[in-house]
Length: 431
Image 1 (cartoon, rainbow, N blue to C red):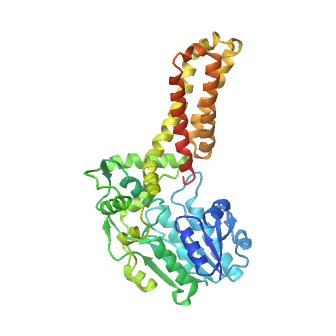
Image 2: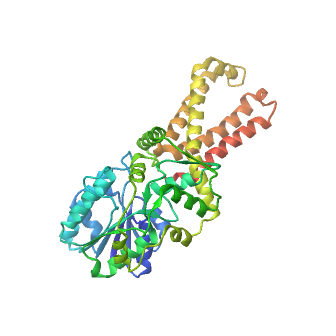
Image 3: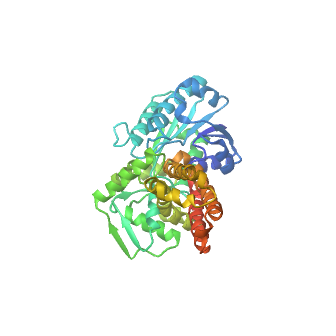
């Protein structure tokens, strides 16, 4: 079959895409960045498009031309400058369903969520529920799957948050540790989609995809920590709800600056509510029980890269915040001590331009600090920070050589600052 996979290089979509290709299907993935899709799943064809902008049936017509089936693995955890939950999960998918009805694309497989409903407690679950209802009311051959907490080698949303908690050194931190959660392996989801794409027997099926048993959230974190190869936390502190609420509000604020933090309120609310489903429905789809949490983790043992990633994910917000504060404070201090900063250059060969140089430095420092805070410009600000650090090093040695009585100091400080900037770059892509 010629199958279109929305969100084809995402956490769930990438595994589905690879599985369908392995089954012999001709797969086209759709995502915002087709280059990323081509790099991650080179055997698929790729269409670059923002689902949120495909708001009408006519917008989808060229996308689904020649397509036999659609798998919707797209989604947005929470609204912000980069995402609109309602547009991505409800408006666009309703338009796509209408377009499929008009174009004769009969098969539609929807990846929803166990607690999705039009009256759910978060816009994430509400919009999933709205799309599910529209699909059920259509004349398409539909299948709806409702996964529990997805366990995959990659991590996003709730699973990313749990991996960060598991990676805490020394003392563990936990909130809602007694909440009951059922998980599902991403490979089981891909198998369920493969079965639905290859058989009419799963048409009209609305099924939960969950393992047989549930777990306390604290036990899942402990299991992930064991998977990462670390000994259990000797002490785990249970955070009071007010402290968790502060962290969530800060994460939501970061979300409006473009950061997709796993601590945002939708992810935390889902974990707080617990995640439960009907495992008998999963058995009916797969013909067997889903993999347990232990089995899901054991299928892909953690590597050194996973341990580094988990720890760097913890450090990432601290490093970015620290760098932003450094540049902003550096610029603001120079504003309030403009005369003193200018006087340093008055005794140099650039005395005639001292004021302009100080003003330019202030503007550059503040611009880099602000650029680091705003996600859309962070990568550019990181590179500018490295370039400016090198520029200060070169210009300082030329204009004010007397400050270099101990040459090791400036070089060490500059090298440390550059290293901190370089730490940020590898983790930017997934945020």
